[in-house]
Length: 212
Image 1 (cartoon, rainbow, N blue to C red):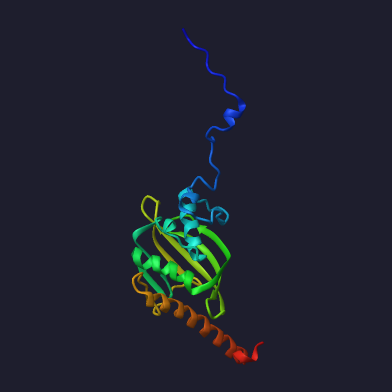
Image 2 (image 1 turned 90 degrees about the horizontal axis):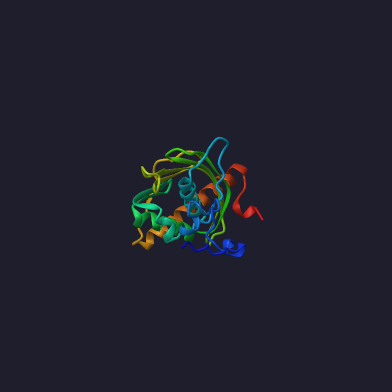
């Protein structure tokens, strides 16, 4: 004979598995430790869940928040370029991101908006950097391009074009096994910021010690 179905209380239903995941959890932000889960996009631009995850990962890295878990979202042969760096392969780009964290005492993300959801994903980024041990600050406007793998699951290349361009020269090769390259990376940034300040002072007819 058929047995009656057991009675299920409302409390038991409440403790069952949720029917839907929150929007921030659905692309597995927490699984990879990605902190930037709210992605701003320009009108008419729509990102897939995985594009949001990869974009959040890259924005975290630019904010000086690297981690091994986040960098598993990059392929082993991925590359990173900016006006002072060429990092090829996992050993070099991991050193670049950890070197960025070491070079600056503070990185403030002033603006970040996705302007294209293609491949590459395009981001308008504005960061203010404070050089560690020096205190000099510089705000940089960037056009960041995130090239993804064919299936869209991982980052294959990131281009950081300052003020919309990537000039030739002044590139530093970064190696995880070479601590002096970290120092070079930080000193390159320090020189770049110092040079811009000197130019600004000269244009204003001032000397640095004239300003209090």
